[in-house]
Image (cartoon, rainbow, N blue to C red; front, side, top):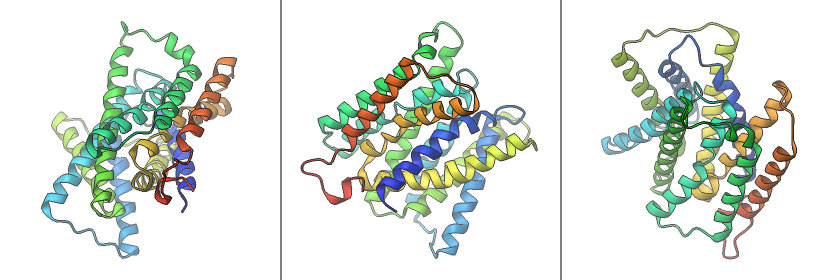
Length: 299
C-alpha cells in the first residue's frame, strides 16, 4: 500500500471517528467503553496475526515497553479525549487534537534528534492556523472561566499522551520490532489498564444494546482502531512522526464535512478560507525535500 493511500485512509477514518465517539457517551462509563473498544480491536489484530503467521513473542523488557505504549496511546489518551467530549463539542475536541502535529515534531526533534525542515514547520503553522479559522466561531465563544476550561486541559493532556505513544511506536519500528504484533499487545495492555481503573473506581461493567452504541463501538474498534492505527503507525515508521502527524490537522476538516452532511452545518467565508489554509499547509509539508530519499516521500 502506498504512503498516499495510507495517509488518505488515516485522515478519512480518524476524521469521521469524532462523530462516532459521541455515541459512546451515556449509560456506559467512559473507561468501560474504552476497554470494550480495545479488547475487541486487540482480538481482531490477534486473529489477523495468527492467520498471517505472525508470532507475538517478545522478551519481558519489550513487554514492559509495549505496555507503556498501550498506557499512553490506548488508555490515557482515549480516556481523556472521551472525557473531554463531555465538556466540548466534537469539532472543538478535534481542533485541540490537531496540535498533535506540533507535539510530534517537537518530540521527534528531542528524542530522535531529527532536523525539522522549515517547510514542515511552515506547513504545520498554516494548517493549525486554518483549523483555527475554520472553528473560529466556537473558539471565540470559548470561556476559560467556565467549566469548559477543564475540557481544554483534558484534550491537551490526551493529545500529549497520544503523541508520546506514537513516538514509542516509531522507536519500536526503528529497532526492527514488528508493527502489527506490538500494536496488538499495546491495544490489549491499554484495555487491561482501563479495566483495572474501572475495578479500582468500582463502577459496574454495563453495556448498552442500542444500535447507536453498538454501531459506533464496532466502527471505532474495527475502522478507527485496527485500520486507522494500522495505516497511521505504518506511515509513521515510513515518513517519520513530524510528517505523519500532519494527518491530524485534516481531521477537523473531515469532521466539519460530516457535520455539513448530517448536522446541517452552514459554510461561511471563515470556514472556506480556513480550509484553503489547511490545503496550502498540506502542500508545504508534503513537498518532496531537495535532499529527500525514497522512503520519506508520500508516493
